Length: 233
Image 1: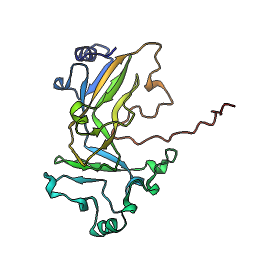
Image 2 (image 1 turned 135 degrees about the horizontal axis):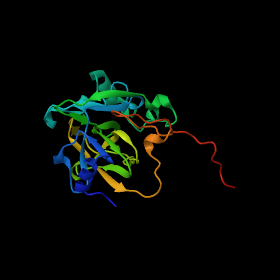
Image 3 (image 1 turned 120 degrees about the horizontal axis):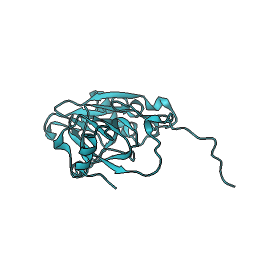
Image 4 (image 1 turned 30 degrees about the horizontal axis):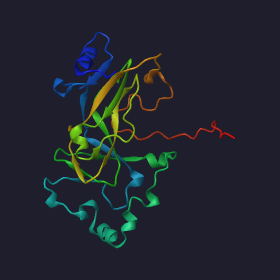
C-alpha cells in the first residue's frame, strides 16, 4: 500500500518520524510522492573515458554554438577520432567494466555549472540527490518524474529500490538518449513509500550493507563471486 502525500507529511511530523527528508519543501510534496533534486556533482568511471575525450560539455546556452569537436580536449584528439572512430567507440572492449575489479570503479568528479552541463548518450553518470533521507518501517523507492522521462533522461539503472532503514543521499545512475542538458537542483525524480509486512531487518543495522550513510555519488561496491553456490547435477 503506497503512502499518500499527506501521509508522508504526517509521518515526517510525528514525534518519532518514520520518514526524514532534508532539505524539505512543501512545494515538492505530491499526491503520493516527494520530488527529489539533482546535486551539483557527477562521477564517471575513469576507465570508461577514451583518452582525449570529455565526459561532458559545459552548455553555452544555445545548441547551435556546439558541434562534435566539443567532445574532445584538443584538435588533435578530434582529428584522431575522425580517422579512427573505433578508438573512441564506447563499445570497444578496452572500455569494458569488470564488476569484480575495484580498479574499474575509480571515478573522476564533474561539477555541474549553474549554466548547465551537456551529458553524452554514450557515457554513464553517477549522480546524487540533494536530499538526505531516512526511512524506517517503510519501503522507499525512487523513480523518474514524467517530464524527466519524456526527455528520455533515465535517473536510475535498475537500482531505484531502497530498503527499510536506509539513511543517506540517493545515488543516481544517469543515462540519456540524446545529448541532454542538466542543471544543479533540477527536479530529477520522486521518492515513494510503501508499507511492508513481516519482521524488520533494517538496512542500517545490517553489517553486509554497502551504501548506508552515503553522501554524494557513490561508486559501485565490488560484486562478489559466491563460491558457496554449486551447480545442480
